[in-house]
Image (tube, rainbow, N blue to C red):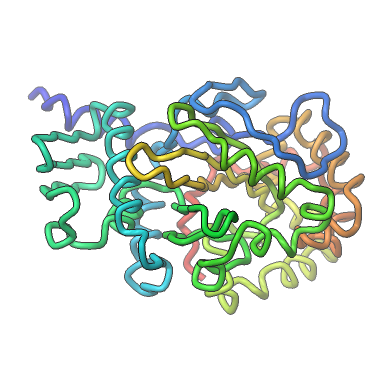
Length: 363
């Protein structure tokens, strides 16, 4: 029996092998041996080859076979904590703008998996991987099961942020965030760009925040840009949600890892390199700017497959000034991480046979 083309496309998509290095947006140029914050933006939708594979071809990276698991985790969080979606007054139209922009992009990028039919203001969205089949009227919130920002958040793996200009400053006035790294959308919403980046050492004092704001204010409507950020995760598992809301769930992970690492150096292979790929888009109808974040994870165990990455990451972490390492949360254990990376080849015999799903954790 021949499967219908859509079912076959979904089956092929979901049976892809999982390789966390294949689409990892490695954040460092090959010749970089020291990291400092900069306004490191570049044009988006440009594929970039790495030692592990390729990234950056599309605005939204679904995550291959892990996409349903990532989205199930996001939907679980949204169901349990409605506060993860924040929309300040006056942002409703920008949320509709964001929804339409992304659904159109998804349908063009993944035509075998997703469809958007438009007849005037009447739209029909189908996501064949997640089983979404929704007809709605643009601008009429009663025709969607959730507000437009949350509806989109339940379809894409990216955290979604919207910024607009108020009183000369760019302000974060709407967002749907389930995978924050040690921050909370309910706390940050309404802040301007200087308030949000205030805790980051050197950023505002060295003028980087001001340059970033100027870049976003001048962002053209017909071009999409991106940047990559990185840290070591605050958890030693592939848990994406290390937000302040979930602090009791992950706050003891690193102390436990440090205890384990004191008796068995291979435990440091559980440390997760967390990479955030950020996209910047000026929306066509409202002029609001999206600042969307897609999070990727790879353990140090997995990085051993690319020795050059291990060596480069060890050099960068070792050289990083103490204030930046403290802000990123690994000052107290960075020497152990560097030691593990520099001897990664000695631990190759313990390399896992297969990479687990990021959402298999049950503890």
